[in-house]
Image (cartoon, rainbow, N blue to C red; front, side, top):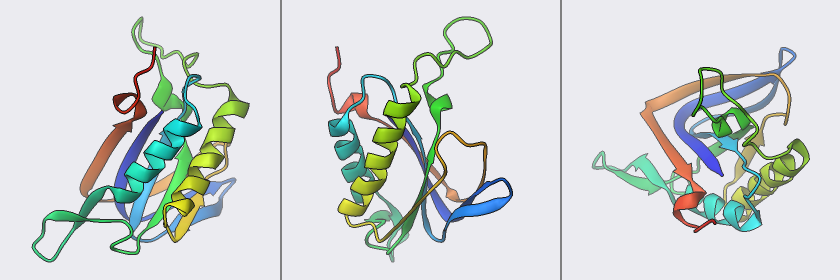
Length: 153
């Protein structure tokens, strides 16, 4: 499972011209799910995101978590994070999890963020053509991949 975590001053997502999710200060998270990902991957990733310290303290050091700043999260499903670009110039997406399974883990990720104390978690619409507005703060962007915490065979 991969997540691109962007520290933002604000972020929103539109479907068919209508805003369906919107946050202020916090994280915009793009989430990609692979077929061998599981609920444990989700639990590890959500806990890491909740504890990630990339907000500045009074000394301008990245030392505060999203909970410390009462931040919000917008989660967007992003199967293109799973692109295979080893051959040729056109990416293959056969390495992404099947839609039903990916959506199950996407929804579980959203619930786990809430379980980890995130006050406000908004989300996009799985499988929809979305327009995402991201006001990246810093910019600060962190790529998280659960394979570093789990040995997968």
